[in-house]
Length: 59
Image (cartoon, rainbow, N blue to C red; front, side, top):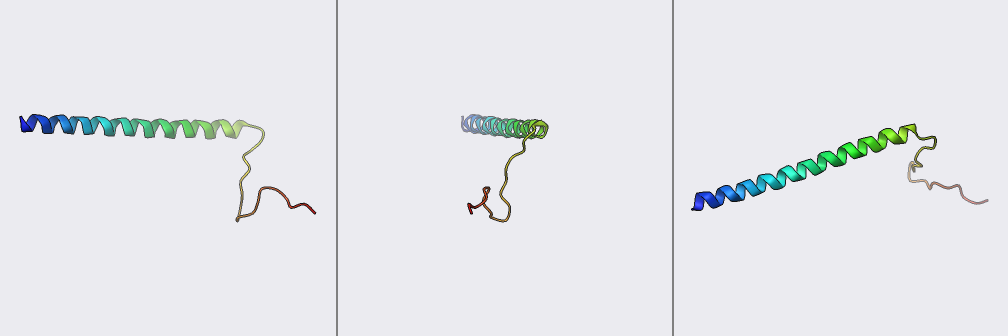
């Protein structure tokens, strides 16, 4: 009986791990698709460089 319970626990653990890996793979593919579609857009994403603000200071 103990071996059966250990087998059930291991099977549940493997199922959880497979679900997690599936979720990670889906997130990666959706991010890659978003990057591909963003490349085709006319306006790009605004990014900050060297800690500067996105907007110019008022005079």
